[in-house]
Image (cartoon, rainbow, N blue to C red; front, top):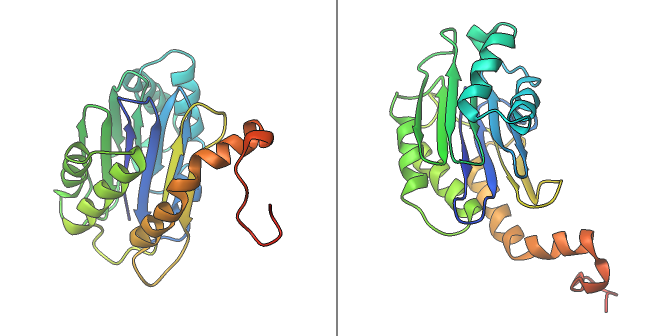
Length: 224
């Protein structure tokens, strides 16, 4: 009941995850990324331990394919899980267990991997990859374009209600972690709207953390 992608910006080295589901708060359980290490989506009857495990394995020197192979070996009930990963070299890997729900499939390209379950059709992940590869600009813009492409290709078999997007760059925390935990409208468009508001302020929030003396004003009443 989820479709997602993990991706790397070849120009900046930034990593990102975008995800949507009919379940509530999907990004809180399924999206993982670590600056300089990679991005992971762990979904389908979710085991939240698999995201950090995959990142730890890649941080320890394994490539995305090697890390996913190790996750397949270590993971409990791995036949129920989907796990997607991208590493600093742009390598990607996907595990989709045979007990994944409904129509499930996956697709990969350089710097991007997509997977889904309970899909409207088996072309959705390929459309997501094509949407990412065919887009330009900031990694966040490309993730949104890819998710919109997946939705346009059919998305999930039923309506989606939650979505999220996480970006990591050169600092130890996500530089963007935008979520819509539940809506009767389109959660992908809700996240897209939040991104358009947040994107121009992203660098300023990082600067405030690193050195508030050089940070721009907050732009709120009483702030000079």
